[in-house]
Amino acid sequence: MTHILAIDQGTTSSRAILFDAGLKVISSAQAEFPQHYPQPGWVEHDPADLWATVAATSRAAIERAGIDAHSIAAIGITNQRETTLLWDRRTGQPLHNAIVWQDRRTADTCTAMKDAGHEPMITARTGLLLDPYFSGTKLKWLLDHIPNARTRAANGELAFGTVDSYLIWQLTGGRTHATDATNAARTLLYNIGTGEWDAEICGLLDIPMQLLPEVRDSSADFGLTRADLFGHEIPILGVAGDQQAATVGQACFQPGMMKSTYGTGCFALLNTGDKMVPSKNRLLTTIAYQLDGKPTFALEGSIFIAGAVVQWLRDGLKIIREAKETQPLAEAADPAQDVILVPAFTGLGAPYWRPDCRGAIYGLNRNSGPAELAKAALESVGYQTRDLLEAMRADWGVAAEGVLRVDGGMTASDWAMQFLSDILGAPVDRPVITETTAVGAAYLAGLKAGICPAPAEFQKTWARQKQFTPQMDADTRAAKYARWSRAVAATMSV
View (cartoon, helix red, strand yellow):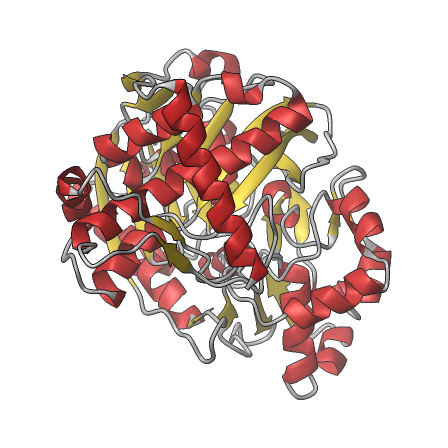
């Protein structure tokens, strides 16, 4: 039993990666699934798609490796966070599509709760802000809009979960209803200081606590898979939300270490150790990982649109066919043009938290074309990351002067990573393995299984593939960032 299966259930696709005991990739499989947009600002997934793609890719990864499931010591799960599901405990059937983390339908609920003065208490306990991003108000919406749901929930007939909980339930045949501390910390319902679901916050949202899963460590026993799934029962021993799993995969185990993941969105985490650092700049205080009952905390900044802006170029504007086409387009852009794209397609995340904003483009002229738009799209990710690191520096002290470890699909673009280093004025390190989310999930499972080393030893195995250092002069950097800041201000004023 020397292999580990990592399940990486993301916003646009599900992946399964089989690792050996040294966390070397043996095989993988990936499957995209449809996105559903019932109304402007609403985003949903069909739970059947989530489960079907996870099951299919897991089987495919095992088959491609040519191994027997008996040789798999553990499964690690990492998942899109905050996405909210509600299902029947008896049948396992969801009552509604999953409401995705990007969904903004509960903006009015959040505004009403802010106006009632509840946000300071909620932030002090959960580390989060009152924003539609988080699961709590999404769950309230489901209970409010599904007939008899709240009564059935109070009677213990229903179960709530983020995607990890739903997958654990399906994998174990309904024997385990659990989550880990990192996913619980994203629900708006979990007190990260006491490590418990918060009864007062649940009361404010009228959420029966019978719905909630048991909270466990990130490296813990989450039960055995059904034997019929893979031909053999496999223990699920690691669970973490995708950004926390990437933090683990990047070996950011020391306070002050930072990583930024570029997937559909962009998420930067700064390890603050055993200290909960309250943000004065509208960042989130969250749990980076929890081992042996002890949480390690982090400051986090969340950008809603990163890789999704490239998808928009492909699927919305149809000016590219593949993501890799953005780099040559950006290189070919007219340097005399300074087009700014503020990709607030589903609102602005940290440090602004303006769910009402929508995207805007500034600086267009008659000669602006696909190349200039592609360049502006890639630059927007760098600018938004600078926003986050400026806020982290203000909260922590020295964060923005440190090295930033990066991962995720967009880091394959040398052009985008060089601009990121330029606009930050800081080194950017790209690791040998850029898909560190799956590595983190596999490590957490392997740690519990006893086949991966302790964090201090694992940290020594991290390897850098390339470092990008600033090439832009300070005056140009300052002028470009000032122009971005004016564009954001103008977008928020509309």
